[in-house]
Image (tube, rainbow, N blue to C red; front, top):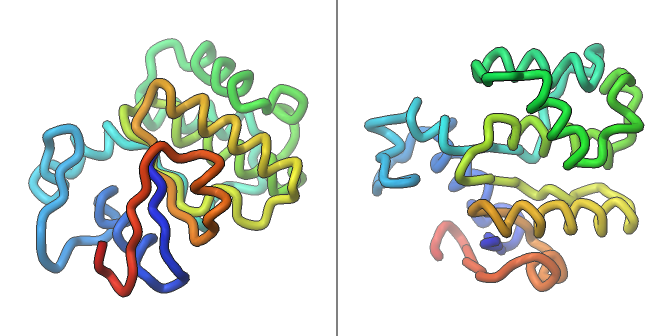
Length: 179
């Protein structure tokens, strides 16, 4: 688990958007799993699971319905099994038949993490995954991230030092766009 630490406005989210291919880089080069982001964006996106800070969800969809929809987008083999695995792994079982709009912020974050992990990417990029959560939810999300970090490369951004201390094996500090 790699922590991407820096103050607000330092460039954490922008850098993560460039790594995922959501923003083009104006200079330099980003490589994910041996693939150049600008030359092979679709291949890179298959290797990455991404949870943006805003966590865009469909509030009118049910949790299980939303994950099944995304399983179809990713063309996942045996989608019902994979969706069920992610529901269990992210602790969404008690909420899986609820509409996303009716969930607490913590459960919405879990849905976001589940969607990011659904296609079993090699790299998981999380932009401020614990922002706005209560203390209990923060502990649960930290545990979830640490568990994923045992199997995947996880890059998470934050401006909170305690987050880095609690979850990360390595830290990159960014300030005014410089590492």
